[in-house]
Image: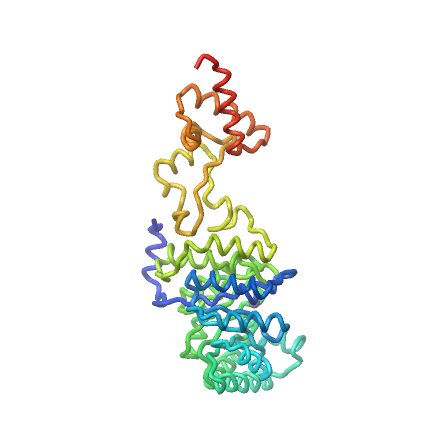
Length: 391
Ligand code: MN
């Protein structure tokens, strides 16, 4: 159920008809400090992303290592519905590596901000423009689909950035990316930025956001509001430093809040999240949106009673839609309705006296921070029944 306020503003937006998700779990996600996937793990994640319905998978950065090249090649040969892309610096050698991996396309990038030109690339703006032109043309000549990313674009003077994007477009780029490399945008600024880019190029605009201020998802959605047609995401929001825009949050927000039909099999999201957590070693916080273990758990008596009557009272989406389960957790906040429901789940017919006594014991244990698991609840019920003896 949409909020009337959301409905009112969304109706006024010029949302694109289609949003392409170009997931970068296997590239930027893998650049999370300490994370490395094996080629086999990468392939497994790619298959799940494909099952979800992601249109483009950024499978890796081939020049990084031999294992990385093997992983990208295996994903490219897998025959997925999704297009397989890889990252390439604006260097012909990087494009050659991409071609050798048999990918459908490349995301080629170079930094454009003065900060990066001066302290990282030690290059002039003219040299940057030459590199963009040469690499985009070279990649197109090799039959690749090409997206161009201006790294640190959100801290680049627009006068120069405009030249860079125009150059990329003139040389055949199929899409340009608005890149918030260090996560310094706010939603209103992102809308302004994307609108400006759309004024200077005709090709679609994609967006790549980082979560340094916790705004990656909000900024990505703001970009879509301003007409961006592609969004970069990672499963569980992993990625460099504070990470990227979380795939599961972007997808469910676009579907449920903005009312866009992506045609995705969203039930795969929970499994994807678990797999990526396992293979990356980066745990999902319990309170994580959509895929956190508490996302569809209820303990407070008031909430549980309402959810049992009508789940939408406290669940803005159906857990089954994202492959999750509703869980009723017992503790000091528990009420009668939850105990009744739990007893029935365990196959015990709840009478009033039993419910009262079980509830009293649960609250006493809850006050002492004891977790009430199903086996502990069975134990409690057994003791209560035994103490009544006569029945
Ligand atoms: Mn990035």
